[in-house]
Image (cartoon, rainbow, N blue to C red):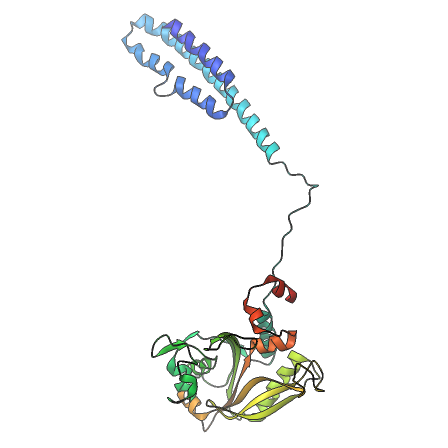
Length: 340
């Protein structure tokens, strides 16, 4: 047994000296001192020996164990230190090397335009609100005074999900939701995506953005509508901008109008952008039809209101000189980065 103990000690020394990693040293520890290790097996067999032999062998085994544990501690410390130094060398950072270039993104022109428009309307006391893109036929047409035979309800113009559900064709359904949920006075604007069955070309897209505006209070007149939109145009396109209102028809407003702004490219003299007229159409508007107010339970004898809808892409194209709406949806970073 004494000879075996000495053999275990010598083999352990040799193996620990040859160990090149912490794992190899750990394997030696398990092989010698583990539950089924060589030294452990000797200690377990001591119960079969005579008392004198057991005492003598126990002292020798404990001495060998102490030497091996000391060797293990030294080996582990040396190997861990070597491993840490190697890791430091591997992960060393050369602070003189140029850093990695972090490429900054850019806001989409539609986002930029919505933010600019929102800032203008908020400065005039409007509150931002939103509505769902998937709407009911009632909110999108019926509540907005568009009867069953209105051409916009045809499946060739509108994306229907079912007979009663569709992708909203305008942001005007937000008007209905606001009228049904709020009491006058009301002054809100609602930016959002809208959908129509249009063939994509330079000026049309089946998905586009609008900003809806709604004001309802006592004594609201067409003069208030014109004042708000004239101020909006001047803040968006410059203080020299002029506005012109032309009679039009929308089922949810009466009277209705389309608003033109003086061409900001030529100052109204006539150019390619305004097609020589000196004016550019940018939005539709009008006084909220009494039938629409009644859907929200508004007393039409006491309250009146106005509404307007602005095409975001149209404003962006005019303001930034974009000649094809499809450029906004191709995700070409060369195009988008121009708006940093």
